[in-house]
Image (cartoon, rainbow over all chains, first blue to last red; front, side):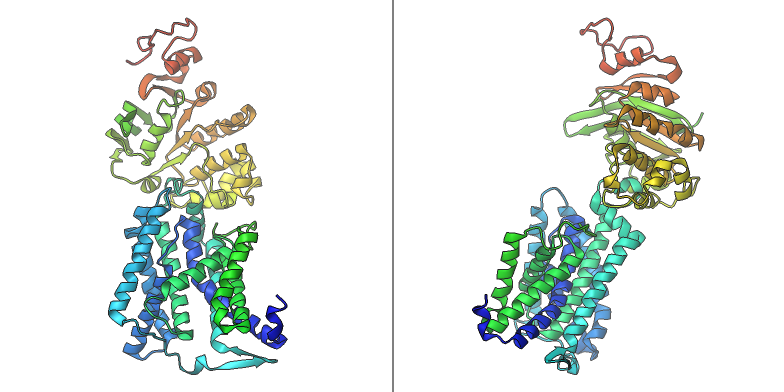
Length: 300
Length: 252
């Protein structure tokens, strides 16, 4: 490890760590919805990354058509994603609910393929990026480190979103019903609760949150119709590192992944993604239950 | 006597297996009725048919004069049917109070609220902040009954409330039933513990292999009568060839 880091100055290491933490916020945004859907209905949505990309294109179309800022486009894209989530869950995924995880995996994999190809038809394979004005260039200096305003804003968004979701699940009537349905979906009808509706709400929240992630991603990096699977992979890694089904675990997992990738990039820019995967595999080997496992979970 | 619950010729099948066939009985408002029978007699299946978790293949279930056919389980609570399911089925990660609040989801008005529940169930009140999964069996059962009452039901179905509980705890749980009946709530108890059921019920209904084996006012039957209907054989005469459906008081 020390040998690897020999070419990296302490300043560069600190910088990589700070940037990695901020990147972790974006990964947490991606992972939150995946974690929620798995936690509540034991469903792994393989189209999760593609929904983010779809939201990115949705924001792109909105920005191009109206000239508004991507932030304003969120006001349209996020509610649409929520409606789509509710519709997909109640119209399609509800039929896959059962003891076997296979039907839902196959169906969401199918949705992923279909979505990628629809986007490819509509937008070609070109790389796109959401125009976000000069905020992408703006940064503030803290000591020797330059911190971009946009990554900080995304990180804060992730913390606020996760905090909001935690409070929603812990304190509201709907949140309580979601947790009850997660505990025993067969018993909630006896309380007058339709579990299919509850699952629809959970999917709506998941799609809405990943739409935020997709738009945030689109403002920081270029994306194509086939970006979804990689984003899904990062979200997966964040979820597993943090602890399956644990909401705040997605932030912990996202930060660990982001820091690993950025330190990897500081050592060798070509190895950024590999470094993230290696740390993921290492954690899977030594602590497969995830960092936050053992704590009382909100969503699992 | 107008029936609150009217079960007419109900049959339920699981695939090729007939779990219940041609069950008919009526429960008047305010009555406490016990459904007795051995394991596999179809008691739980009958309750599932009433709550809508398992739609009957034949027959009709009427509630307050209306046919329940086609009414999904989650809409029956709003009409006033609550159930304490077998095995309690509490929401383990939720606190006791949260369990009660989920029970009040149907927003029916009536005598039961958090305040009146805590007054009637001091044990539940004491544990209100505990996670339901951390409670003892008896505490869980009391919480499950309290949760069902939170919907202010007209009819509450209790499925095997004594199962897995120590006799002294069963007694405590059963001690709450008169309090429920005192609010005018109709109670349907499914039970394997015959003595306990006879002590609280106005009327008993015995099932044997998916059919009605005995139906009578609780004051008119003895444990021996029920044992006969229960096993389909006389207990004392030891006659295993006797099919037990031609005795006095037993409905063919």
